[in-house]
Picture 1 (cartoon, rainbow, N blue to C red):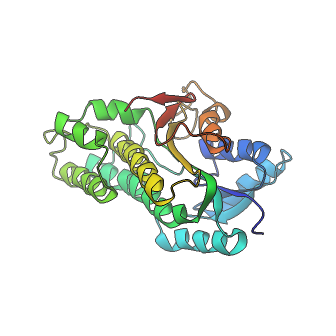
Picture 2: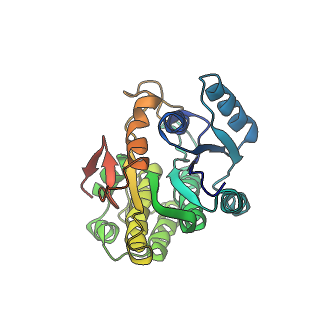
Length: 276
């Protein structure tokens, strides 16, 4: 199977992820894997797409479980000899009306949206083949949350030399400050989801920088993106976009032609680069 191209979409059983899988099945020349934490929900999503005449494949993936991530890594390595497209879409958000204490929301949201995405990336990025594409689904909430950070934090998050370790420590600091009820006085915005997506955007900038050093000349392109305000379980029924409309930018970045050099290491919304 080493000659067959392969794409993986995390959190692919509903919402934007499912719409991304649908679009990739139509536009990507190769195998498309819909991954989900719950195999039953994943298989049901695959069956629904089969009903539309599409042929995604399924593999279990819980981004909060390293064993699960490594099982996918080993499967891709053995069956395909690597990976051509990775779309890191899996993520969570608490509803505005949720009464879960903010400290708990902070811990759970950061663990999935930042730590989970980082762990998947660390295991799967080494498998990316030349001319591969990586898309980390962030949010327009990330620049708006950044604007509400203290000047010191903004400077750190905009730094061109920040490392993944330093970023992870900052994300952990936010959770710690939230647990102590001190996050706002320490310069953080009052949004766990927003901070988690700052993490995803900055992580993408770091990963792109590292790929330029370690895989120079291999034509790999990595970006973060915002799907927009999409009608999903997460954003609710009043959002302006359908899931298929939300999938447009992630899929555009996943299918950038081999000749493309940009966007690279950017946050992209509506196919346009958003200043960071």
